[in-house]
Image 1 (cartoon, helix red, strand yellow):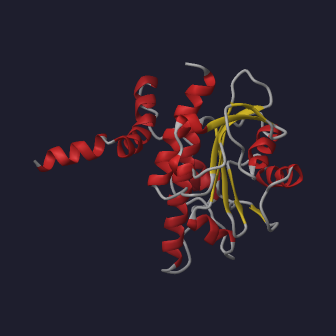
Image 2 (cartoon, helix red, strand yellow; image 1 turned 180 degrees about the vertical axis):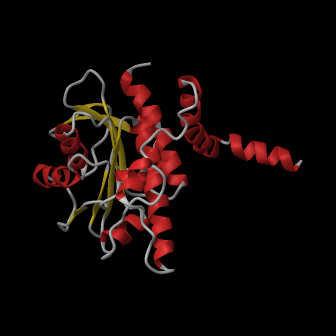
Length: 246
């Protein structure tokens, strides 16, 4: 299997999970940097990301040209091209219109980390790209990449968010974690002032949560949650639950 087809399959699964989690729907786009191909990335053609199949993915260069596959790119392809160009460490990029990201992008309350490691990762609150309109030009893409900086996520005012990761799995999981953090903070705000972690407490969360485990056990634990989400969309969980009822 080529890197292109392998990434297309992984992105399809990721899109299915994010759709099931109501993070993407008819809009949004999920991409991955193409290994060994400088300045190119894999992304679905201009269609609903919730409905993609592996054959719906194309390879773009950083100027938005289709260099492999069939179809035309989403208008906001510069989000991905400009983040990849600015951040060589980033291997995957997601743009979504997640409801709570849109709410906090317009709120006077910053979306801060509330859960586990994210309490330190997003301690100061997510940065917000303030300009109105689609990010459909290199100039706007560069401005968004500058807003993201060295962070792992940014909000787009009234628009949604951008989330990055070391691979497709990490990006999908970070998007779910971002949604969960936003959900918790939104709920806590209905009860009054949040009891935020101090900087020292937040830093403590960066220590390995399971330092007593072997590398193999740690890797299995890290994959457990993603496997659960895959099982939700590939029918395994439904079949197991249905079997339990019989």
